[in-house]
Image (cartoon, rainbow, N blue to C red; front, side):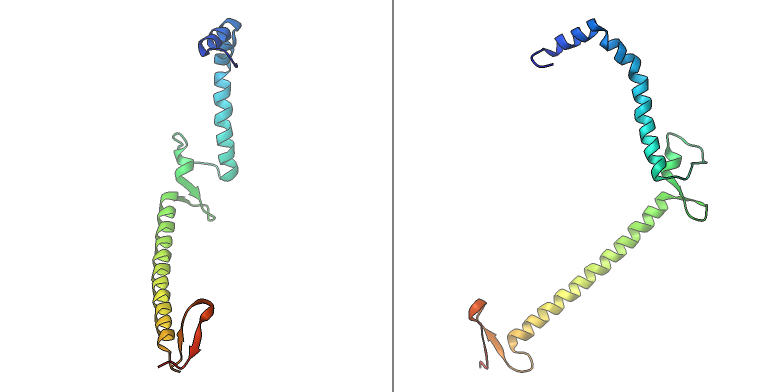
Length: 132
């Protein structure tokens, strides 16, 4: 409420009985919030959890593959991380090779390559020719 002190707001809500009504509705709010989370989880993971659920750990720690066997998500995540790191190291190695190739080609261009032609200057005023 604009212009009111927080203590006045609390006092006025207690006087009107809003505080007690909110306490009565608290379990309903908790259930609705929890059911929303569970419903959204079940929409994403339609396979029911047949293990012993302990605070949802069973559903979150395991997932069913297409053959119907239960596998640990942790091992799947470890496998994905390993594959990603291998791919990343390959890409880094490949980038290093390409950068070395680019540097080698730039040096060859500046030396004149096989033809002996050398590029002098930069920008709009480049000159190509047989410079000694």
